[in-house]
Length: 202
Image (cartoon, rainbow, N blue to C red; front, side, top):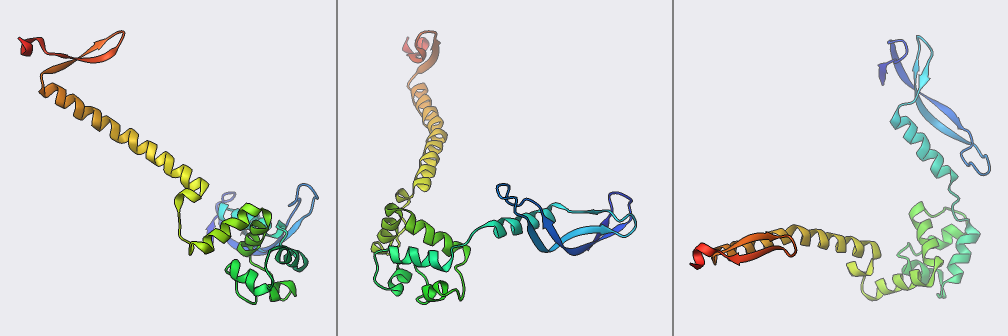
């Protein structure tokens, strides 16, 4: 991939290199080596720079590298803390492969980030555990009101819908009153009120 160099106007090409990301962890000062990072390099003026996509790719690599996955011992602690007798029972409860805990606890492989998060969440609180248990009892039926953020979102949607529909209802009321011979007059104290049109009344 070649682009025009913003410094000298000549063509520059993309190159790969190992990039040392300093102070990836601001607390410990730990640095991370990003393998096969990409940047643009100009052969004419020797300037190098990143575009946004390259910067985002590096940041994503660093974020993943700084995460501390569960160790085999920690996974075992979580599994044994749950009220099940066998590894298979825990795996079934969490909708995992029946051999997952054998592989993870022996260090053959590790859970991906999604399963790592799942293990932490189900062990975090009794409420989380009971929620998963309830899902099994209801065959995983989706009930929007059982989900806080979904429920709040639907409430807001309902309010917006009412606000949109209310003016139409008001216009309909005005049309009915007008057909009956009433006219609207603004009153300083009581606001808009409807009175029978004097001419029609006469």
